[in-house]
Length: 310
Ligand code: SF4
Image (cartoon, rainbow, N blue to C red; front, side, top):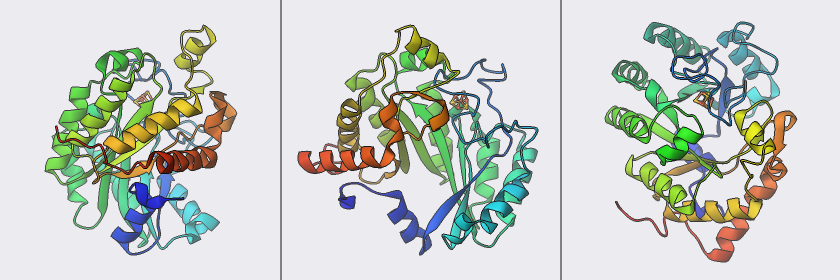
């Protein structure tokens, strides 16, 4: 694999921390304002009851193990021996959706459990970033690496409405401004294959991520999970999933337009096999990654080769 064609996360983390550094996925028991009625109900059309993350199977927020137990069991397991440093990663649902006091308690606890923990990474919605939360996150920066993952998915607000995300691209830009001013790393999520999406939408989304000075990106293909609105749309013929060829072609264009400063955290979707309806090729992550590398080589594409300053 020609790793030099784009900035890879593992290389970045190794350089930053001087050793292999992995993430510990922790479910903080959060929910989402787009599910509990505050912003909407039912959530984004592609999101199932796991909240776009990895809520431990069969667990509800109430029956989850404590943060302490989750981290300690991870560190005592085989996976806890695979690196010398770890970043605590609140992935499921919206990791800043709580009072500042409760967030402080949860983050503090997670960071205090082992000297091997060197960072805090939180996935959330752009409309759940405000000055108070940014101040809280900033307070950890003296001792820890701090990074916030923000859903964008698309820069086209009309598609944003179709996917029922209930925040705007402007919300994303404002959240980035607050985080950038505080010197907190931002990882943007974008999806390829959303309903009604054109190539221009994909490239406009890359441009917003470049302009907002995000330090990282996660690129996902759109996939259909059981019990989602997208599944209903698929079954009624309103949504047709993308092919692997289309995805690879699009990812090559994204990489070519992406600023050279951005680290690529993810280039594939990672659907739970048991809930995946379509497209089935998304299960084969390694094959998709190899095919992307092959396409980059054939087209002689490097990250940022077609990057243009706004
Ligand atoms: S914002 Fe995230 S957790 Fe909330 S409904 Fe959308 S994808 Fe799911």
